[in-house]
Image (cartoon, rainbow, N blue to C red; front, side, top):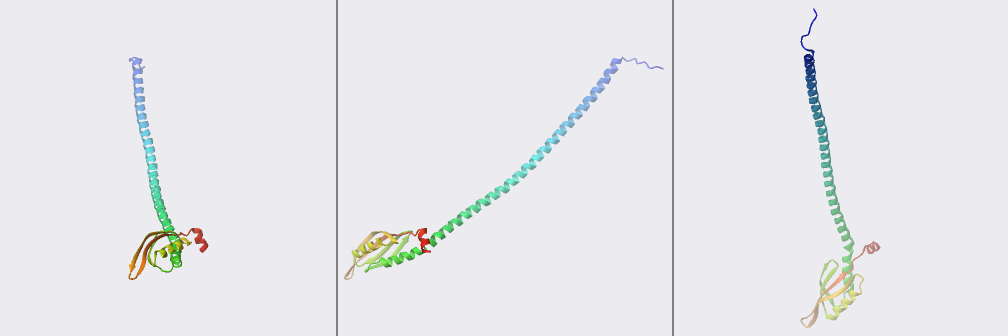
Length: 189
């Protein structure tokens, strides 16, 4: 027997389209969820990759900061060693100066002048002593003025005292020692 459809064909077509629409909507919803999940996964992978890179960069920066600190400490040590070397070099250059000072003082000391003390501060030398008269102190000053190792004599104090029947002059004289230059040190060496 032939089959006769008593339902109107439009109603059936509407149901079919509604089912197709629901299937398409469900598929779209599932596809949308998959796209969102995929996007979240991709972005989380990108964020994780960037965090790994940042961590690596921070580690490298820390290593470089340690290297910089070590270089700074080495620079400080180098400066201290150079300062020490300079001081030692200056002391080595000035070693013969004290010999020249004593030698020159004995050569330039006139008769009748006796030294009781010498004090040196850098190039300045303070000489204390006793002379038979103040004219002998003047002779000492002239002798020092003619010296190549001593210069700029000046009298700080001359005091005449009487010791028994004799009179003597106690004096304090300052003078400067000529500093030896590098060229002079090379000529002698």
